[in-house]
Image (tube, rainbow, N blue to C red; front, side, top):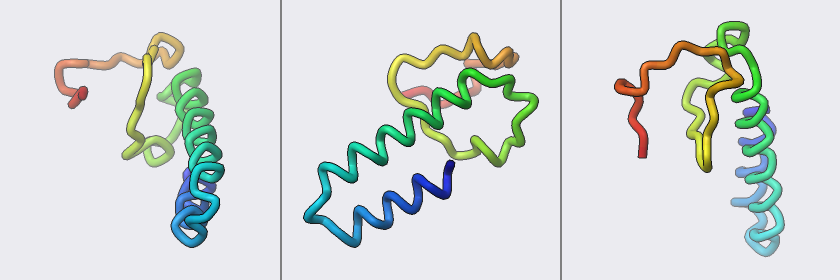
Length: 76
C-alpha cells in the first residue's frame, strides 16, 4: 500500500494538470491505508508497514488492541 501511495505522489508531480483529481485519489488511498492499520491488531503487522505513517482526522486506536502510551507520541 505504501508503494501505491508513493507512486501516486510521483505521478502527481509529473502531471500537474491533473493535480486535483490525482490528489484526491492519493488522499483516498492514504485514508484506506490508515483505516486498515487502525482496524488491525498492530502486534500482527510488521512495524515497517506503518513506520512513518502520519495519522490524520479523528483517530480511534481501540481497534488496534495496542497498548499505547500517548505521553510519548508527538501529537499535533
